[in-house]
Image 1 (cartoon, rainbow, N blue to C red):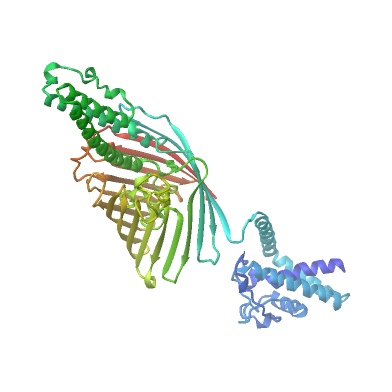
Image 2: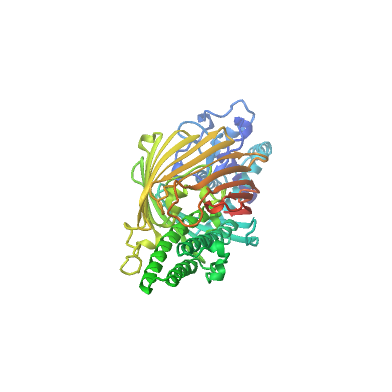
Length: 596
């Protein structure tokens, strides 16, 4: 009896839970994890009640006799067997349970010693006929059982998913007549805890660790303060010294005196601040030697020093802005070791309105998105080409909130976001810094964006950002465009104009590029972009020789090795770096991305 029970159980379970492909002319159904609420409790015990089974097939009568005799077939109330549809794992498990219970009960109570040889032969013939389907089903069930067991043993939460990404980069660069950096390896790793309590809300906790900083990246190193910015200050100081001596009736050209011989020695000083202070002291000393009183010389020194302080600070901000623009985004690490990089919670208020709050995050997560230039792991890497740096004021981390309103699923979406910089939520009475005055004080930034997307292939966004930066008002307008030209080609562009900027230069900025899919392989991606981060309207109040406009070029080719690994060679050119007529910077990067 045991072998009869085993054979009957194995066969009838299959007949109760699958539709043979030769009966309905369809492939064996897949088993997926679906909503358990989809399980139907109704049962049909006669195959005559099914409307989607071929009654002319030889197996129909045998199938009908067995199913109706043992009464274990699960059906649907609309009179279909639905063999062409996917069967959920919950339906499979429920059907299996009912079939086992019925067969075991039947063998125990009614069929002991009554199973005919004819029924056994019918089962064997049907099993032979549908052996491929049975094999596929058994393999799928075994695989699902193994996967379910693995998930159950490894999951740490029913509401939270763990994802991660690691970017490994090999980077080097060169510039003529410069102290070129060595080729450097750096990395950035992120772990994301993605949580949803209702299925519509989203809680993100992102931890990050990185080995890079602005000077580890070749472009950042070559545009560091100790480089061309320092050289520009020295040149400015020497010219100022020459002009001052000539005003004091020391014709240096006639005397052919080297400035270093006069005790200046600016070129021997590394620190920009020390160069600034030494320059002010030297000019005051020259005036003292020319007959000025000590009080007059001291006043001259303080006046010159304050002017230099203002000019150096403004030029320093501009140079830092341009340096950051040229740096690889994943080479910028906000701190050492593991850090909290993002903490945000988004939830719907209605079908049209969504709200986000973030005690730690970036304003670019909510505005200025672009399908082709917005992800340093999949497309462009240069910081200034993956966001509108002028509009977002360097997109520094901080705390804030954002809203997104898409009325009636129309082509128009209105977004707004506000951010106070990370350290600036501290009260200024605790920290001796006049700029740290709380979350609604200096420095802060708010952005409003109106998007018009007439189709899934195009969008244009008009933007305004305003706030306070460095104790000064900050107002910028911007635009963001993307258009898909077919399935493989896309173009994009960004524009910004600042009404207020350090030095009162009112700069504009722009970038544009193309992205091409499947250039050589099915899953590859190629892109090229060009942009100018700061176009000056005037620079009369600035020291140095901001006499040109920096232009950034970047090209990349991304090849997906598999779903978890991609490799990208990247080339970058920077002409007139630092908005000066300096030599062109060339950099090369090999980016490898691991994700899970």
